[in-house]
Length: 156
Image (tube, rainbow, N blue to C red; front, side, top):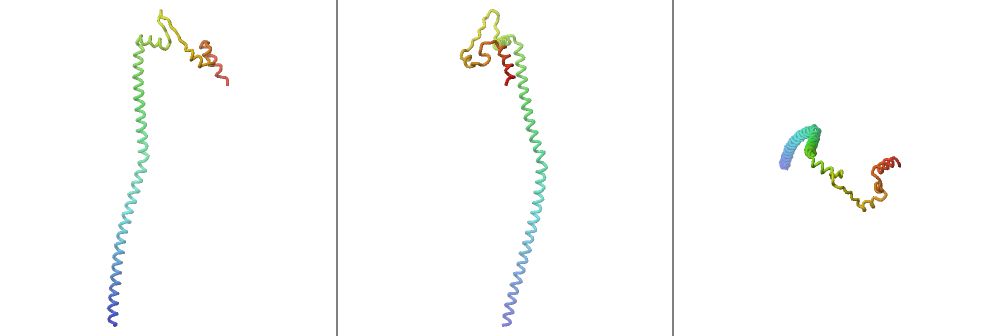
């Protein structure tokens, strides 16, 4: 029986040794994988640090660039509007050199009449009633109403 115990022990010993060797191999492979992971993690962290640094370094210049592009677009728009207004004023200047146009403006806005014509001013009675006691509704000359307005402007 002692031989059987020894054989069983030796088999158990062999199994134990085999298990220890297998565990050691697994442990070594896990350590290698973890070492690779830690290297990858370190590289990834370094890469992330560089990317973040670039983003931070470029954020302000990009913001300035975009802001300046907006300002340039606004200035170009204002320039186009000013050019358009200049062209309109040149056209108006050319029209003002025409005597017929000047006569038409004088008739429309200043109520001028040509010699031999009779000018009429029609007052709308409904409009006069709507104004009520407002200055200018009393039939007084315009300059009297103007001076009344100047006098009443200082009063509380």
